[in-house]
Image 1 (spheres, rainbow, N blue to C red):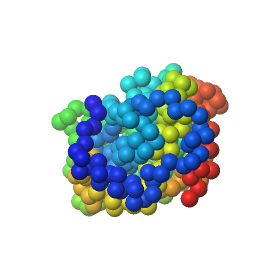
Image 2 (cartoon, rainbow, N blue to C red):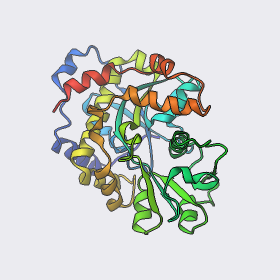
Image 3 (cartoon, rainbow, N blue to C red):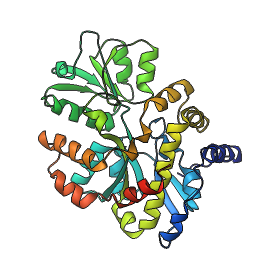
Length: 338
């Protein structure tokens, strides 16, 4: 369903982007060739904070001359790249490992660039101080198969655990089960989540952090969320694809330079109800990493981890050769230097 916004919301969104100088379309856009389509469909993530560059992208997309912008509700399973592969949306931000899985499953997905590093944090009981100690333990997460699960699969494999045999997963596929609350009550051993869940646990003084993907190596050296596009859209509409990526990267710059104002917009638009959690999360996520990090390294890293434990069959080389396209990102790194 498209998001319908009030005139007041639209004006405040434009004011925010204008204040950051992001509504200007570079002159180089005129030399990109004919703009093929004014239509784009983006995945919308209710409750998510780290994907603010996408959730608040409408005004930036309209500045890129998209006049027909639609937001499609995210699948409750958290399989955003797979949703794009099915043709239900044209673009989505998704965790790199989930993009790799969608590609391995034969999905028509093209990885276009990284957007930010980090955001996941693993909380544990006081007596647990490392991921390796989770063998035989219970770990809670929001949705089985969603981004935190794919992330913990890669983490477990990295320390020599079999994520299918060595860890007991507790998920919220049953609405009556809330893993975060089970962790708060001491009924499970650990909980992995992304904003605003870590902020809530800290505010309630529950558990302690044994892992933070924003700062802990090697994970902090690779992208978390990446922009993926439907393969057919990317091939048919290369100019439109580059403009979508430019809008998302400008949104990332906005998150880096104006986290407090972006946090207020997330609250105003109903993506989260806690301004303090949102500003804390946005201030700590490295949104400027898209200029420095190599997205191909990220795809290779997660493909190797997932292949090692049998979660994918494709080689990193095959995935990179057939389902990535960095030409738009490389051009934008030159265009958006400032």
